[in-house]
Amino acid sequence: MKLVAATSNAGKLKELLRACVEEGADNRFEVASLPGIREIPPPEETGATYEENARLKAIYYSQFTPDLVLAEDSGLEVLALGGAPGVRSARYAGEGASDARNNDLLLESMKGVAEREAQFVSVVTVARRGAVIATARGTVAGRILDAPRGANGFGYDPVFFYPPFGCSFGEVDTERKFEVSHRGNALRNLVHTLRKLLPANGE
Image (cartoon, rainbow, N blue to C red; front, side, top):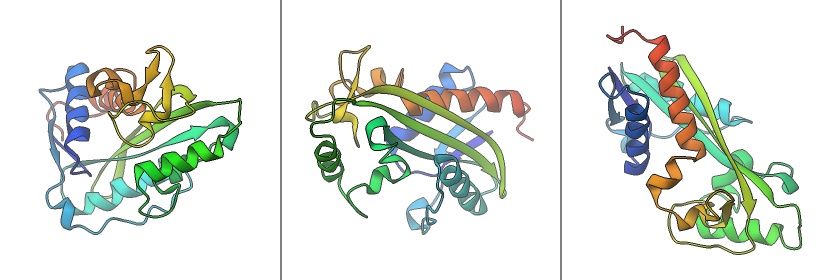
């Protein structure tokens, strides 16, 4: 059974494959990037929630292939900011903003704030021929640091402190982060659900 991801990011594909292996489903799913995705105009992410955005992306990209299509939406929610940046995490400092600009704005917004609890959220959805097959959610809780720490990861990883590790996500390698990350949890939950929903032959 082929499972194509609506991404050309090699790291995300590797995470999906690892989730399949962890759930004992590697012999059932052939994981790949959606062919020609770089040439396909992306849909406008108009959803008010991660679920809505993941759903609309999965349905949109499923028109370009007969295979199962996986799409994801994720973000950082900071308690003291009322859940912001939330679904606008990648665009917190404006359209096309770099990770550094988003982090700078977040830290500026958190200056002098004692309540620094936050969580990463990931929602993954699988669709085929315009119909949603399954959706799964994953989260991981932590705190916002006063300054970035570490050069690993991407997005808000350098400012997200994970207490059980005693460091930021920017200070651990990808493999260790995946064991507890929001995306890792969501992908494992999704693969587990797909194994129950879909027969072995994928029909």
